[in-house]
Image (cartoon, rainbow, N blue to C red; front, side):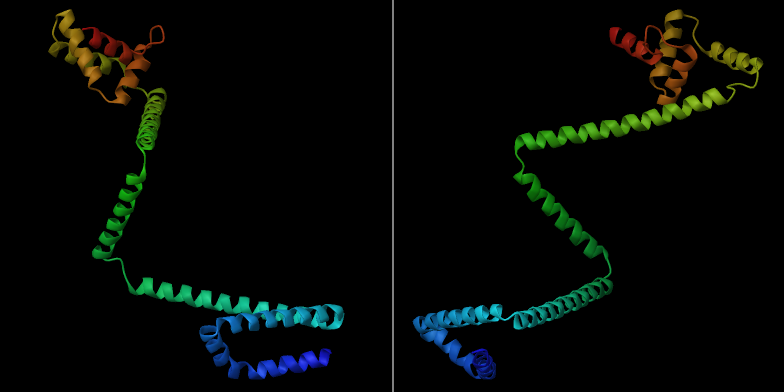
Length: 227
């Protein structure tokens, strides 16, 4: 029976090219007959597989052939993938990023973002804005802390003035231009500190110290609000 099946299979392979047109016509013009044909083919293959399973030698041969076919198929796909990647690289290499192409990409990204934002609900938009504000605030605080720490290191590792006489001379020059009225004097000092950079405010805190956990800058800000 095995030889009959093998002969039948060989004849089927030989007639495959000749019957492909017939099967195509049967599928389009006589669907009922084509369904019967498919069922017969299905039953025939089922019986063939059943006979193969009963013969360990032929079963092993079938498995080896299947492995070879799968390997060839995978190798073919790999080669096709390499060719497609090579072609895509050639396309990208032959098309440099001109101003027009860059602008087209930006326009495409803007359109994608616009469609994405359009789909967002109001609560999602509020959450995204809040998250963005928190992120920017953290970045600003980190930058400020880094600047202040660098100022602290400089003040602790270097002498501010070469000697006391230099400090006295600078103080004397400043007092000559500052008003003698206590309130005007305090107002000018307050304004100087308010308009100073974070590094300078940190230096004032370090030199003057803090009171009850409140920095000099915070006390000046409180006094400004009260006034």
